[in-house]
Length: 98
Image: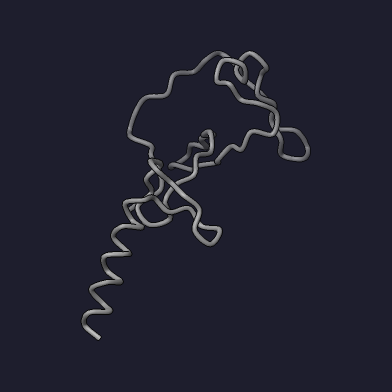
C-alpha cells in the first residue's frame, strides 16, 4: 500500500508565486504558515506526484499500512496499533505451529 494520501483532485492556486533561491529554498508566506498553524521548524514532507511537488504537514505513518491513526514508536519505527495486533496474532500462530 502506498504511503501517499493524495487523491486525484484539482489544486487551487492561491495567487502566491515564490522563487527558489540559490540553495534550493522557498519561503512560505507568514500568512499561509499562520493559517495552517505551522510553527517554526515544523516538519514538512515532500511528495512528488507526476510533475507536481506537494508540501504536506508531516504526520507519523505506519510503515506497513500507511495509516496515520493510532501510530506508536517501536524500535524507532512508526507502527499503528492495528498492525501491532496483526503481528502479535501472527507471532502466536507461528509459535503454535512450531
